[in-house]
Length: 149
Image (cartoon, rainbow, N blue to C red; front, top):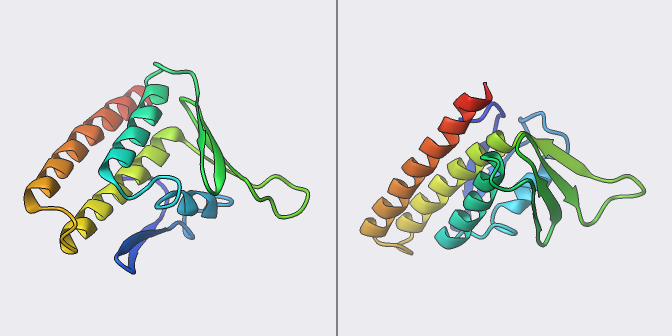
């Protein structure tokens, strides 16, 4: 569970995250990331999770990524999302602790997997496999959460 407030909503058979109560400045950059830059497919979610995990564990110093809406730079302690389309002269940036972002990513993934099953895009067996992967991912994140305390 993340320390930031957020909720999920299903719209047009997709999972949308709402971070408006998170108190994160420019949280819309993270909202746009899910489903746009990180696709609602297991392989894409797993690939992104593993990239952030390498940074969190110190295996990699930095993760640089991005996509349709933002440039991303993740470090062990924090992740920065910078808008590709700033409004005016100022840079539009959202900063969040990497571990907290990973918690949100995993929560979103769980909702995506359940939505995929609901609309029969995946089988019950595949859902169980994905939820099993999620359990393992939570263990890895929680292990590093304890280390950071």
